[in-house]
Each structure stands twice: as C-alpha cells, then as structure tokens.
Length: 171
Image 1 (tube, rainbow, N blue to C red):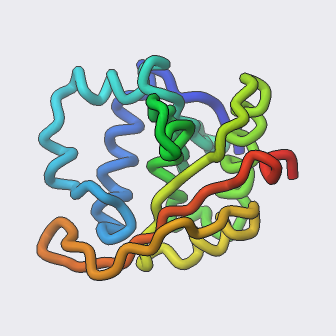
Image 2: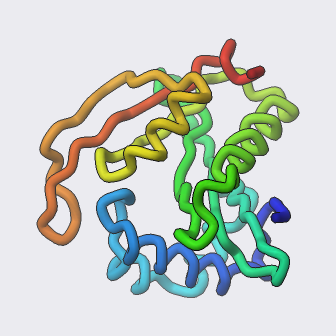
C-alpha cells in the first residue's frame, strides 16, 4: 500500500470512493450519498485543494484508491478551533490490515511536522464502533456525546466528539 496526499488529478477517484463509502456505511458519515452526488465538479476539486485541508489516500498495487482520511483546520478562537479529521474510510476488501492505523499515523506525523500543537478532533457515530476503537487506541478521549441525533434519510444516531490532547500526538 502507498499513502499519499490526494491532488486535483485524483478528484474522480476520490468522488467515486467517497460516494461508495457513503452508500456502504450511510450512518457513519454526516452526509448522504445523494447530497454529495449532487455536488458540482468544482466543489469536488475544492475539497482536494490545500486551502481546504488535506485528504490522504491509500492505494493498492494496482493504484486503486482503497482508503481515505482527511484533515482540515477549523479557524477561530474557541476551543473547537484546530485540526479536525473527516472522511475516514477503508474499503471492505482491505480492512483489518492496519491501513487505517497507517493513515492516522501519517496525519498525526504531518501535523506535528507543520508545528500543529492544538488538539486533533473528530466526530464518530455509534455505527462506527471499529473506528472509535481505533481512535481510542491513539489516545482520543470523548469530549461530548450527542444522543438520538436526527440523521439524513430519516435515521437517528448517537455521535461522539473526540479529541486527541496535544501531549498524546507523539505516541
């Protein structure tokens, strides 16, 4: 597996992969496949622009995108400002091989290399128990639990906000 930052040339692969993830695990994401399928081509390109953050992709030996993890920085002065993870997804065909762990390590290492010292944050739903276990293994702590949230497609989920304290990012 090769991990690299996705670029504008990867936009079609990213779009297809993200839509497949949303269809396969709809309760794991805050967006629906239908809403994202309606996004313009320009919006998909913007999602991969450095100004919006970074999306990392893991590619198999045939150069197929098999996993993603993005990070963006929420600007501001409040406690929620700082880096946030999004679009963590590993294709079912390559799960349980440590790819998610490699992506997490890459994101954390890159943030540290850029001098980022604020907590790293994310949201995870109860539909993503294995993802939550992964985050906890890195030292993420739950900062807020939201119960019975109305979700897209008429579903209801529980969602946790988690943060990785800055002193834990060096592990």
